[in-house]
Image 1 (cartoon, rainbow, N blue to C red):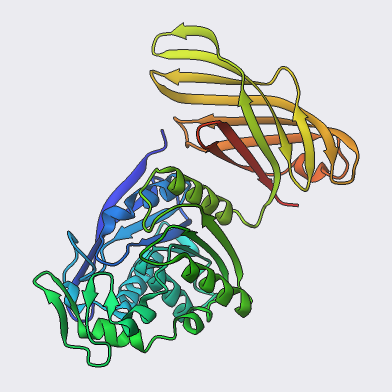
Image 2: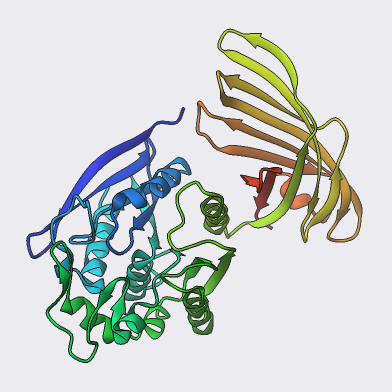
Amino acid sequence: MQKIKASKFELTRDDGKVLRGFEFRPEGKNDLPVVIVSHGFMANWMTTVAYAVQFAMLGYCAYSYDFIGGGFGIRSDGKLKDMTVWTEVEDLTNVISYAKERPYTGDEINLMGCSQGGVVSALTAAKLGNDAINKLILFYPAMCIPDDSYSGKMVFFEFDPDNVPDEVGKGFMTIGGDYIRTAQKLDIFNEIAKYTGKVFIAHGTKDKIVPYEYGVKAYEAYKAAGADVSFMTVPKAPHGWLNFTPSDMDAFFAVKEFLIKDKKLIMDVDVKLTGMEPVKLTGLYNDVKVPFVGDSKTHYFEGEVQPGAYDTQRYLTVLPAKMCADYVLKGKDFAGKDCYVHIVNKFNLIEDMKWHPSVSTDSEALSFVNDAECDALFGMKYPFKGPRIRIFAKD
């Protein structure tokens, strides 16, 4: 299995407070693209670590960390009452500088933020600009913070918006007056739209903390500014959907697509499994053949999976150590010509945990895929109706 190296890191801010977090990266690799994942209000690194690990498995050097004074159970220094959105922008900027200085990272820097971490990531991207930040990923970004600061209620903190005290709350559940006052001065949608690079936003329709409409407004602000922005509606999802729930898996699947956005969706194969045929049992390994049918409908090709399609799988106890799907589809290319597409898609848990598709065709219009370096994304249709395989290539 490709080994993911996990290590702690620490950074000292100008005021002497220490930020702490974790770095995850594929061991032995260099020139790695970077993803920095930022947590939400009163949260901590554990709410984002699953994303960081998944990014590392995709070949990124990924960071999950605690903002200074950022929330409960943090490893970093500081108290909640000393935190503002702008102190967190400073923290994220410091993490970016740290990541860029590593000998195994390259020039590509991507930011992902959840809730308030999304606001901080968006403001940081606007501050540093398109040349510094390649892509921006925002999960249920808390663009409501300025409006909440004027309303006199932020989550469960209540106050007089016209006479903001120095502290709001009690004990460890205390935010500083500066947090509210700086939010009241923030023209959030004009500010974030200074970044006009590639942006992906995902927001749930049942979000009661940051209403869905704020995600839409962020999308509209980026769109009006000329950003290359995508928006994903997550039906019936609340605020802060949990890792590995259907909502989360669908959203992260879309993030994977976003990260390979320079490639086009060539095939979108809706797989229907038709059984399982044991082949042999050898030691720890159990080989099976899984027959399937299905179809693909994209701009480039529409057609049906032909009889004889199999996914040959080798299991190491209960884990699929190796898989190889070999199948042919027949249909029409985007020029309206009859053609076939032959796909061989391999996965090796031991080597790199990635899909490696090769595609060949007799279509003249699709001939660019014959020698192309393709990417494949594997997902499940809910409620567990079967796999969905999407294959991307440069046109």
